[in-house]
Image (cartoon, rainbow over all chains, first blue to last red):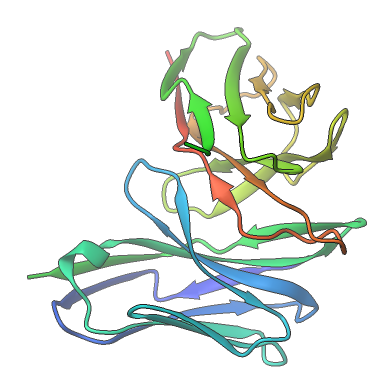
Length: 114
Length: 116
């Protein structure tokens, strides 16, 4: 069974720092990996999706990399801002009983203070 | 606006009562999912459906039921058999690629269910 671990569980940093959030997974036979943002009491918003054949994806100040063979992905946030404060979750999609199903980590809770 | 809508935002259940959470999408997505989120926990899969009139159990289906009579709708019923229903419930949908894998997942804004 696929297991997804996110480190650290929580992070508090001053504004302007460059950040790295980590996601690891136990079964490397994945189809894709997504990073999401969740604000308190809200749903999830997809930030980046990396196909298994890709190494990285970029969107603005966000860059996500994928090393499928080692079962790892990192989300890099450049020049962090207070508005980046949220919980960040990763989800890996793998085959399961003939379907492709996303499996989520527990998330990294990020606070960026001014 | 296209999107995925969950209602109600807050729901209270009395002991022994069944309650139904609504999830509607107008994105023409094939697949729909129900997840449960407890504080400090990741999302756990309850049920999913990748085609109308068909659905599959996820990891924690006991005490829940679903239906998929229309492509745009995937309601979740929390039955009295679910002894610990207090949680945040999230519905998601996506298009499926030719191989059957999901494209980007879209989520609703969630329903917070509490027990009276």
